[in-house]
Image 1 (tube, rainbow, N blue to C red):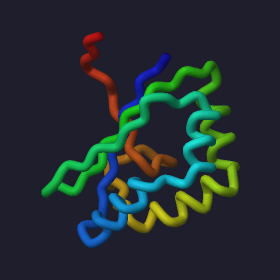
Image 2 (spheres, rainbow, N blue to C red):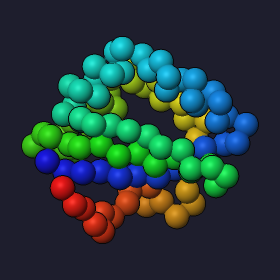
Image 3 (cartoon, one colour):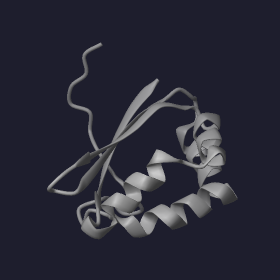
Amino acid sequence: MQRIGMVIGVKLEKIEEYKRLHAAVWPDVLAMISGCNIKNYSIFLKEPENLLFSFFEYHGTDYAGDMAKMAADPKTQEWWAVCMPCQAPLETRKEGEWWASMEEVFFHA
């Protein structure tokens, strides 16, 4: 199992819309998340900095393959098209990233 943490900005004028969207995530999107071996997925909001922090556990054996499967899913693409205008990617993210990946520096079970 891998623990994954990522961060992205959220536009101030889009915070309420982002909260509303995530209060009722589409069932097909949730099914795809589960089908790609992701469990315990959370997104946290930090105001007034307007940062979103996501955390999830990956329980599969081919993370890149599962992420490609998710990215190819038409319903997930539709969901992303609705959510992405709310987000403000960090300028310091790595090439090819939308959400910036984070290094885990501490874990206690």
